[in-house]
Length: 493
Image (cartoon, rainbow, N blue to C red; front, side, top):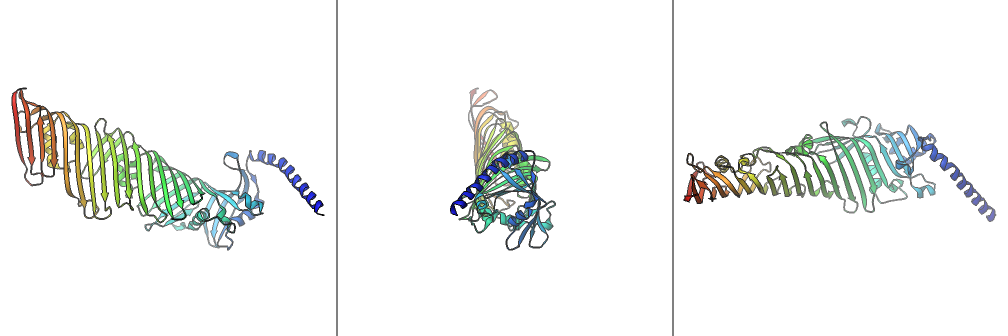
């Protein structure tokens, strides 16, 4: 009996193997010319995708067998997918959904999805002021149908949760969205944007979840693209992310408004990375930027009032503790010959804020200081320098400033410290009009909030040589200013 059973079993297995060897090439050849309709599987797949307690269900228009990406794997594809919460109205619709099956479960006679891919869905994501997320998935995602939260939560739970054979969803390994039309509205930051072509991949990892995304953005009619990766750790709820951009102009992002409006200052193509560390509750422990830029324009709005063409730029900065602390390691701008380097720290952002900054200009023609020296920064000293010092080159000009804003809005800035110095040569100094100016002088100037001091050496006045000179403009912190001029003149130049 046993021998006959074993013999029959091997005959059955042999028949199956031979059958598969015959059928699989035929199926593969047939799939190469298009999907095979398998509507007989509709009820089975609807049951697989539904919740056992009836709280969630799915209906399909049609089911087909197709070759997956790269023609390396068979996929069950469902067309016209609609999801329901209980017996209520639809909560999500997707044009096409593809499933691959868990091989081990299949050997146990269970139809358990291993991965799911959504094709061409229309998705709307809203981040509320309190940080919560709401989703809509369907042909016309609107404010009234932001009801797909349950679908998204179930999908993420399936990928993040500890694998469990008794909960088939927890055997999910991968979920993807391909060619999505994505609308994002961030009500906390008061901005919104549109990605007409978005690809998103999420996969299970040993300690949580990893996700990658590539988005083609439509920013007011101009195009841009970004690529992002996110890692989630299940044990401590931690999140780390990387954003890679190339050729994206910050001034375009400024058109989104809200917190991004200040980016209008940088109208140049950027490339580089933005990295973030925090947790799933929305806490941002650290945000770092490492970016470089090409030819464009820099505009500093408000009282600083600077606009200048830029040949190249480099930026390294970090933000800490939910944006309450910031550190600008370096902002380097090539201004077409002259260069500007800026470093700064900021503490207490969002409340009483303190900012300390150091800026250095190199190889700047004195005649260009009128453009590069902001009118609001030591205005009396600026007025004297740009009005009375010309020609020549400022090889280095450095300024240090410490500011405090009691409200954190920076419309009530108090200058607590200001100092700087400048080195140059070949300078013409009109120290006291209409007297003959000092020409071709080497100058070393220092300044603070109270006075500007200029040491001039090596120049000439009316054919005479200037061996030493000191020009002091004082009272810069007073209503009335005064000048003290002392020149030492020797024989013929």
